[in-house]
Length: 218
Image (cartoon, rainbow, N blue to C red; front, side, top):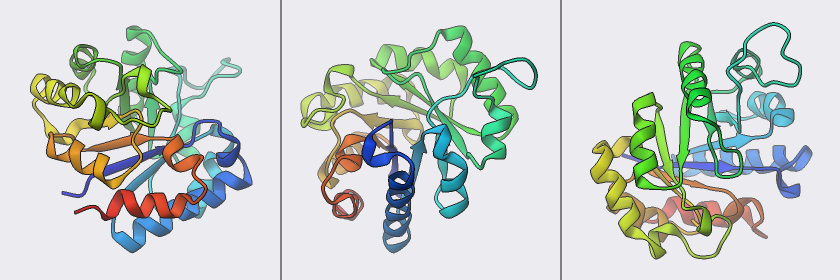
């Protein structure tokens, strides 16, 4: 099974507006060339144009449980799907949500056919979030996010722990500090389905080269 690689564009300058579209096309190019399962999570302002331009799955970085009506400023699942989103990323350490909001969001997303990735800071939290039945649980120790040392290298026991707790390999993603194909390989070997990363690609001088390295490790 090919590892799932989700690139979170966050709000980096290098992944906003026209630069976001350019980066998305690079991700799509590498995915096609290597037959890799690359997915991207983009800002809502860039979602529609990117989703219309690439064939890889495009996720929203957030959504709210509200629906049609008087909800100014909220991101509804209906609007995200209409703009081409295939899924959503929720509960990132930079945008934490309450359990009640997460429950409502997962239910809403599922009803509209959107995939859901729920981020967790610890294996225990990840185990708790599985009760909401997301498509993926992404384990991301906050201290390693944006750093140069990956969770695969620094805290491999976290991966083993959450695999043991959840017991379903295809549902676990590993995030924080992921940069190389070796990181992806170690995560997969320890039982993860793939990785979630951001700066390792978005702020790289040569994102295409980094992506090729991520997907080419056997």
